[in-house]
Length: 119
Image 1: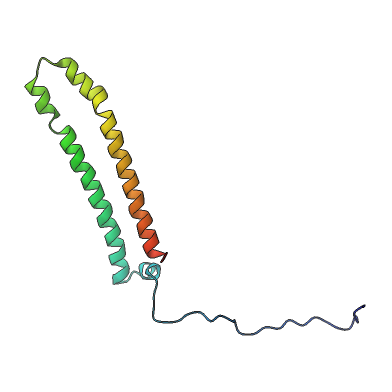
Image 2: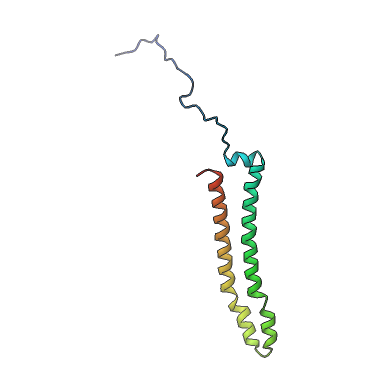
């Protein structure tokens, strides 16, 4: 069936079928973008959790390395022990501590993003 060349296509437009929800609900991301008190509270909670994680790592590190001078002073004849502890004994705990810190910080950020994006 050939079409008549004089007929043209017509584009029909109308209101959108789904209207946006305009209730009084703001997403947390909007609160953060608009720098409201609630948004400030969200960001401050993330900063507080990250600070707590960093201070925990610092405390463990201080407890691990802090007493070493006292141990070395108590045994002045154990030069090989000093080199063994400083050269090899500290690397494994330091790597494990660093790995724990990175995983914990990433988990905190992931939880924050999940909270902000309402997932």
